[in-house]
Image (cartoon, rainbow, N blue to C red; front, side):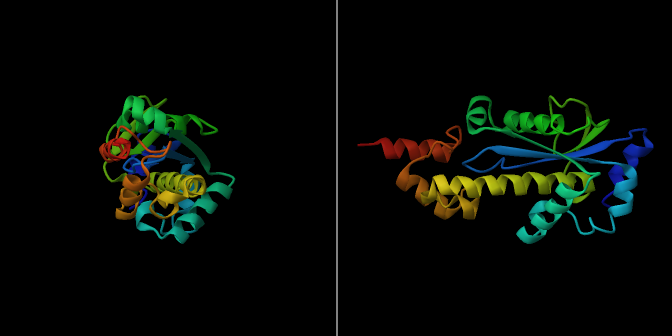
Length: 213
């Protein structure tokens, strides 16, 4: 099942496919990060029920399982990984949707070899360097997109843990920048940090309140 979309595209004549997904579109802080994963048909069909068995949407995996799959993807000599991101400044300047597309394009461009075609999670993406097919909830039905979702989430989660060391008052290591109750309380108590997205309403509201005399 997790290779159904890949097989459709192999049969259509594409040789090297890649999956692309993002992490961090909804949080109030931090960059949006995209992952791209490419691999040959031979490898994917051989490993789907072996070392990649159980790989699915990163949100459905435990942190331990995500880290384990990330290590496999990163260490396998025949699996190619690309990571791209858009900064908080870019998100605020061009909006989160366009910034997400920029991050995805950068992830594909970061692959060692340009794929023939890309399978993208969600809606169609503008600006990719090759042709693509958008698959709604693709991270649950495409092995390549699921792999990309793991790369994106693990990479971003690690970044947020590092940012937590710079801005410990917000608890970023726990909620990864999402608008949890604890995060909102910290935001309205301390005001936004440099890594908060001021184009997001809760951040603007917190900034306005904290500026009041």
